[in-house]
Amino acid sequence: MPTSIKLLAVSGSPVKESSTDLLLAHIKDAITGHLPRDWQVDGTFVRLNELKFVPCQSCGKAPTPEFCFYEDDLTGLYDTVADCDCLLFGTPLYFDTVSSQAKAFIDRCNCLRPADFSGNSARHSFIRLIKKRRPGAMVLVGGEKGWFEGARRVVAGFFKWIEVSNEGTFIFHSDDYKVKGGVRENAAALAEAAALGRKLADILREQHG
Image: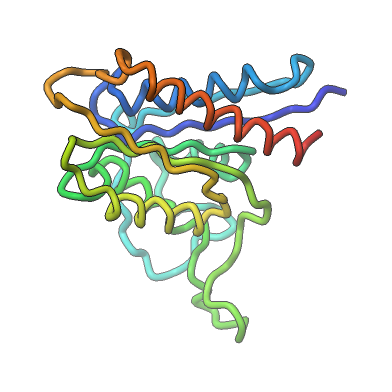
């Protein structure tokens, strides 16, 4: 039976075919192309801007055994996040942090490790619903003078929360914010993105081979 790999790319860009979208797709395609041909690769690309969901309501109790009390466009995505073998997450920079779409999604993923309101465990304050550790990478897109550390910290915390090891932080400085998908003309950036994809593929080979 061939090895099966589930790839998930999540874009927090409000602009379709933005540099964020293109870089995520490029990395995902590089992963697929570098894995053995007989492996079955299930690749999913999600644009958060196309989903309808409410912000986290801080319900004050754990939704277990479900991931969340609210049923909306994130309901099915929770299982995809929990089950994927590799996660790519990308966002443009807005006010030195992630986009509103990305932040709303990250906040709603708080319930993937909900607080243990029962107090049954003296050692742990949160319920670790996701058991397996997966590789991943983040894509951050901003202007020439963009400050990326704020966004990096948010995504890094998110990765830690959902058991994803960050194997690469891809930062792209766009030289013209008025050009949609400007990375398409940047051969060096695309080559670097492809290299990151091959690195992730090598990690998946080692873990699943």
